[in-house]
Image 1 (spheres, rainbow, N blue to C red):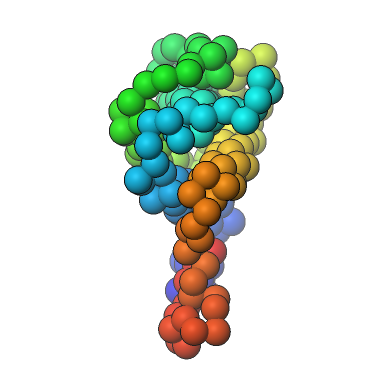
Image 2 (tube, rainbow, N blue to C red; image 1 turned 90 degrees about the vertical axis):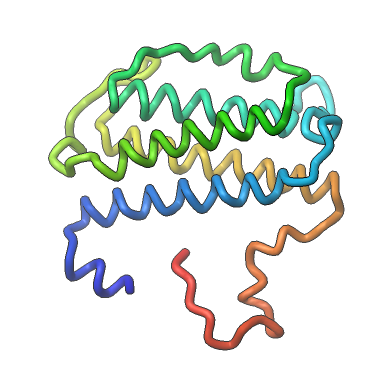
Amino acid sequence: MNVTLRQMHGPEELFLDFSVRKLEQMMSRIEEACSGLTPEQFWLRTGDHGNAIGNLVLHLAGNVRQWILHGIAGQADTRRRDAEFAARTGDPATALADLRQTVDEAISVVRHLPPSRLPEHVLVQVFDVSVLDDVYHVVEHFSYHAGQIFLLVKQLTQRDLGFYQYLRKDGPPDTVITP
């Protein structure tokens, strides 16, 4: 399938397509990893300088909203970054649903983004970045914090999240998955 995509699209479209797929993959994995967590597990902090899974979920929603929905799509910047880390309680399902809605909106923006806009500059926070830089930042930032969430879930639940079962010797022999 990748060969077909490369033949049909230039590097700009490949970048945008991969960004959409990676955001969707990480969002789905966050939802899967967090399913079954108690509110106490969702908000557990390991210390004064640690973040709970809940804080990371709020932070991801704020970041995606600010960088994609504000920076690229031109929506109002309503982010309250300090509140993302100050939160200590809340309904996990509501926080995850807000993140899902934010990611879905961002995916729609990126999916419909004309490649000609990639070199355009936008101002986000105090940063003057290209639209390409903006999208790249969001994908890498999202993946980074998703990894933290996965580690915390594994530590709290002592379970394998199963994201890479297809790579095990006992997995399906002919499985081909796009990273």
